[in-house]
Image 1 (cartoon, rainbow over the protein chains, first blue to last red):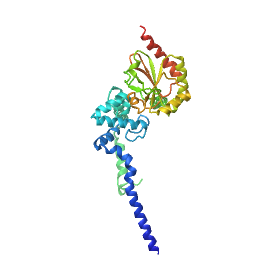
Image 2: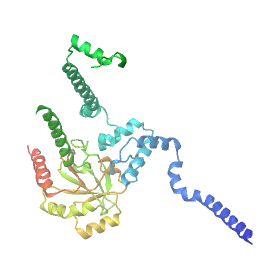
Image 3: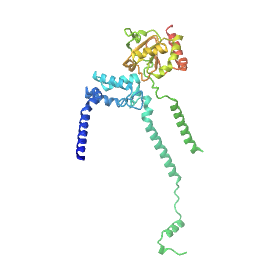
Image 4: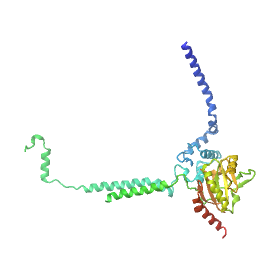
Length: 167
Length: 178
């Protein structure tokens, strides 16, 4: 009796798994549609949009963002790619409209020199301060040679116990 | 004494930088479009889609382009001000109805009043992308030569209207009379 129920249960499980398996493509159909049309362009779009900032939620890339504007911009980029534009041309198109801020990797130019080279300046400054500090400490330690009396005392202290003079 | 002075100065510099950083709104991205030609467009008018409106049409006029949508909360906040400024008549205000449904937009104007000479429908947001719109409301002041002279991201406030927009409108209108 118990075995019969078990068998029935297993059959149910199998059936529902099968059903799930066959219905999954239907559930995904909407999402898959947009990526199915050209895998090369979709791969390029994903790569490029990871370099771009979503203007609405500024800590997200255009690839990750679910904002409306990000959708529109992805559509725009996809269309421009289909029209044969290069990544550089598309980046130029976006920076003309939204400024360098859309780029996660800001370009090296006079206004961003401080951003790019500032950390190295700080590093050099830190090394200089460290050098000055170490040098100053070294200078403050004066070399005073031991006198003959000091030598005798040190030798006495370091001598093995058996040779030590008992005071 | 001197050994405490250096950390104190460094600390004060840091405080100044942080204070400046706090006062800034990270959502105000400087627009690269200032002092550049306003992107051209031709869009159907909201109230009568059979007619179109183009930016080129506005050559020779100083005008405001206000990007709005019925789903935009700050637009609602800004709206009474625009109504007042529009009836004062210092500068014509045109609307760009951004990513909106026509019936929603019309109902919105019907409920709250229409400050715009006319609104153009940018249903899919393409013109918005050309103008670098990333959050409505945004307002552009465009001069007689079709050059964007000022951009306000977010709602226009009385302060900005009095201190930035109006003086610039006067200046731009004065230039043409020379």
